[in-house]
Amino acid sequence: MAMCAGIWILLAALHVQAGDGQMVQMDSSKSGFVGSQVELRCIFINSNPPVKISQVTWQKVLNGTKQNVAIANPALGVSVLSPFKERVSFKQAAVRHRTPSLEDTTIVFSSLQLSDDAAYICEYTTFPAGNRENTVNLTVFARPMTRMTLTTPTIVARASKRKMTVATCVSANGKPQSVIKWETRLKGEATLQETRNQNGTVTVRSNYVVVPSRETHKQKLTCIVTYRSERITDSVVLNVQYEPEVKIEGFDKNWYLNRQNVQLTCRADANPPVTIYQWKLLNGSLPSNVEIKNNTLFFKGPVTYDLAGTYVCDATNGIGTRTGIVDVNITEKPMAQGPPGGVIGILGGVVAIGLIVGVAVTVFMVHRRQQKTRTETDNDLTDLPPAHKPAPPPPKKKNSDMKGHLTSDDIQVVHLDKDEEMQKLPLQPPYYDMAPSELTPFTDKPNSGHKDCDVQYAELDTAALASSPSPRSSAHTGPGDLVETLGVIQKSC
Image (cartoon, rainbow, N blue to C red; front, side, top):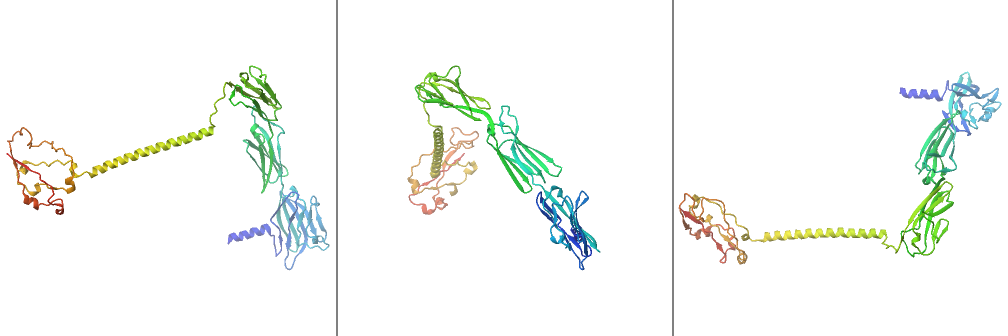
């Protein structure tokens, strides 16, 4: 609340001077350009009952000094003082009447000047309330004068390649000051200079610096001036003069004996254009069958070895002279014309793609064949019957274990299906246990410390075989089943 009260007090102090119901209404600020018209409003709000207006005075305040501009007095009339007399007037005609109405004393500046930039006070003298006044700030803008010029009408590209100013952009006497920028494809740099004038305006000057060359010729250079919200542009196209750039055309490296209608042409890029072309042959004179027309050498008749040599063309313009050179050699027969480079490139690409595809297909087929061979080998091993697999070595038993009676668990019975029975199987080599053992029944010599042992054969207990569990179901047994029995050798000492 205290802040709001302070704001209201401040506004009242700046814009309204009141007392006992009287006030002076004015705009806080006004602006205009030099030469334009502007109104400074001043209205007196009277009280009820109204007070008597004795006089209205307009004053200019600059650097703390007051200067009278215009006065309206009911008894003395209206007076506008110098130097405003020709440019300032009261807007309301009633102010100038014999019995004037002074509640609205707005004044009009018909043609603003930079010197009008100041604060203006509108003061009412009343009775018996006293003086009431308010202030308006008038700002005068000056639109700058903008121009762009070439530094020199002739820009010459020299061999020294020195930088030079090619264009200047000026925004003069602006208030406020302008901003200058450049827009171009040139590779140059800009300089900036500001000058503050006594009347409050500012002049901005920018130079564009570049190394003149053949590449800068006919390049567009645009100056962009920004003043407040306005954008002003101006452009020039550089005219750069340079020596000729010379190139000799016509020799295709295939001048052979008896070829007809050959010629050499001297091409020159120059500004200004080339005025003189001069042909010569190094270490000799031009052939007798040569005809010179402007910048072209025409060789009449068939080609002979006499046309070989180094041809020189000197091109001259107003800036200088430059030279072009070509070495001409003569062959006996025409050179073989190969296919165009584009065709060779396409063929090479096709061949490369074909090689890559062929290698990829070959690798794929080899890999697939290896996988197929490995799969077939695995399938063959999987399909082998159990008899084709090596038998595990028989367990080793001690003498004490071998001396007991045989039971049905000591005998292994293998039942074969009919299909397996009919299958011819290759003979398997016998399995030998090469591990050292105390029992070596097949050695010629007994182990030391043992006697010769008698070999006995165990009788097969068919009843035990019938009652022993079989790894195959009884449904698969029959008369045709082949029963193999493993004889157990028991030895005693």
